[in-house]
Length: 178
Image (cartoon, rainbow, N blue to C red; front, side):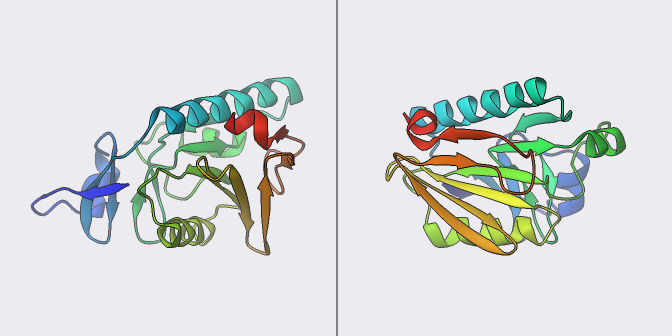
């Protein structure tokens, strides 16, 4: 869930220069991300660990971040989990906010998140250099993978794998969401 915070004259440039923790800059306002549950936190941690372990095992390089501040074409965001390629790290490691979306992002739905808002956020990421977005729905035990050309749906019993970034990674939906 995102809760609007009353701020005076806090611009996207302010967010880029000094991104406040647990806040995004959305539609001209600084908003605080709220509604994160224990389940949400566990899935975020698990996915970050799984992607990071896979990076080490596969030798692809790069790194994984949680709530990494990034700029889309119109907002300042903090995706739940993000994969950064070695090239992105080399080019942007020393700045406060990534000036684009990471190539692979996971957003984990909180019980109060509206599906339409999550789909809009995924589209925003894709329009800002992201190649693949995982929308994770813990309560319904479903994961959607959205790329510029397709949307794939998975549920318990399915094996899920990356499509365009961090190639070769796979995990069962039950393992990730259980």
